[in-house]
Image 1 (tube, protein in one colour):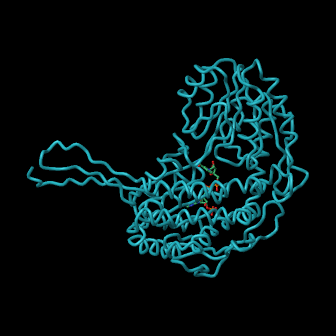
Image 2: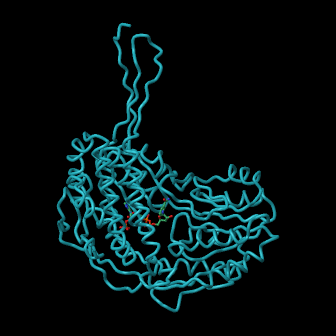
Image 3: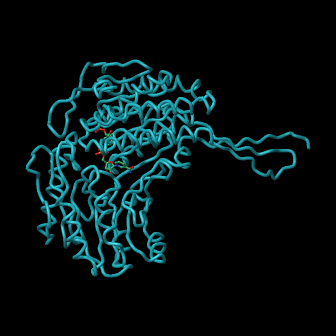
Length: 484
Ligand code: NAP
């Protein structure tokens, strides 16, 4: 049985070769639960990134010329290799990221599911034959792989965020240069180990680590890169969109969120609290679809606070590798400081902490699961992404009022609401300006559905039949002179 150390590579992958940075410089990586040094990774920059892009460019003709069935077979083998090594990959993920082992296994399982899904989609990249306005001409539409894809991913889902990009890219016939987050590079480098293992040709997947700005500048300015897919913060996303403008790259952006979670008086309260726990505390609140704002109608407000606080107080905080842990540490001390600041601001503005409220006695970057009642729109956490285990709960009276409040943000990724009224379910869903809506459900992500935001949460969809469309160009072919 494989061990997590079998997948820990401390080199970058360029053209099938595992290399150090040209300068030999490295960056240390540590375990957020213990503060211990896990290892290091090359501190690469523009030169290594350029070499990786050239390798991906060189590998593109042969990879894209393979039949869809051949690419699908390799992707199926990749999905099988992930599943076979799920435990080792999950342990590696928990050690670098901090999430509980059960969640890490869930994420690795999701990675395999995305790769398998796109193995299947590889064979369904259909074109069209359009009725021609000319008797002697025929109009064909084909879909072709865009070419070299640059993929930049965040630290909160270091395995599955890359699966959503590598899967459709390879399925469509594209080659990839990936840049993982510096704090969680090993789950991404493991993709290189797995790709080698199943026989994906050298140069099809390249992985560089190191200076975000240098790697980002090369990826966005190099004309050989034809598409950038980014998951991360809205602020970095905006920089990358601008940088891609000069070479007019195809761009897709999965950015930040500020998810509202609405509970109407007629909701099933038990179900709403269960959904609230999942939509708030997964990955210690560090997901882009985590609830940032709970809005609860006044008739059930007190009951909701009571039940949510009781459930929150029971969450067991600890090292993700320990049995029974349901909440790990935050990614680093900066993240804790930000959450502390938001809680202090909420307290100053009249927020009532019903459970938690501060750093956890375990030290490191552990934070207590927290509920804040009597939240108001003036509080910073009404506007800013909390990215931590803090649940502010606002009170509302009317449907129109809560829809306006829920939409009063520049973000538009996920939202959730609970009601038993079918008319309200459709009415509210249609008025919420979000890319993803969970009705009576707090966990909605699946490889078969399109995941993506609107407004400043980005554009493009990952997963589903739509997920491959960003990796292909549409070509119109007019066949004339048919003399019919
Ligand atoms: P981040 O700071 O934007 O970093 C994301 C990635 O971008 C990292 O690999 C980072 O590298 C890199 N990066 C930073 N500055 C760069 C630059 N100038 N040029 C090129 N790359 C650059 O975000 P994060 O803190 O890792 O992740 C949390 C954010 O991601 C949250 O806002 C969350 O909502 C969002 N997110 C969105 C989704 C979604 O699907 N919509 C999913 C997950 C997370 P370094 O690590 O080396 O700095």
